[in-house]
Image (cartoon, rainbow, N blue to C red; front, side, top):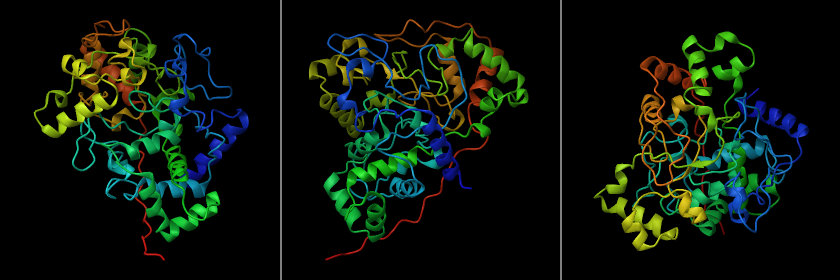
Length: 407
């Protein structure tokens, strides 16, 4: 039985035990209340913050560490092996981009932890990017996607990346037309969605379905085996690191639950990446464009020309430099780390937290100097490594169908 087939069966079993989560359309970021965006905070004129009925709660501000369970698909995008296979093809297909050269896999390579090995992601030809390419490993469990949480479902994340000016830079109409000139896609879309020609929104649904299969298998993760009762799954160093994680190091205050993320937003005072001070005109253009297009005034930009994170979404001064907490799963394969890729190794990350983080205008009070000695830091790294699969999760690029002229 294939990995995908096993995941589909597990997801189906999980679905029967849970009521339906928020649909892909309902979960789109444009329809969120402010308290949906930043759970736990109260805003005037908005509904009381609460989980969507039936949603899978993988995170909480006080959730214990837990084994990862199969993700559940939204009711308007059910999983099937045929849909996953179509999504797999589209994920690797460069024709879903502006100039037909930038597939999803360009910035989310299976061989590079489903991200890139560079601190900053690759930009669309003629541009540069400005943030680290987040791994899509276990993205199925997030209810806030991208570093600033601007999307809340895989179905809305996929087109956002494909349209992004420094990412895919694609236009829906031309991408949809390309699909219509590929006979195999026409057949697959018709069988799956019942349309005479491919509809681009269905392409994003298929890609989202594929991404829901790119998840950790608990049987292959030492920490999950330990949670299942295998005392030998963790080394003595990792067990000491687990105690530090929950105790002295206080990592679990933000990295908790099965995902090892509370999906909240914090300013940690992460050092600014050199791209922000670059003399490269393309990098300067990207940083200015990203700021101006997100509503930052020229006066504010010149006084504070950095990546303001959650502020771009909420326009609240108290959200400047806050970024969503990432999952710690599969860390061994997903460096560099932080929103700007400023740390190359887990040891550097631990050193940063041991020093109490950096300087930030809205820096969280949760960060304090930890006073860890060298052995404790090594133990903590050993535990963090136990959250990764024994072998990297990879996939091979499929053979893509040919485009053909038509009347």
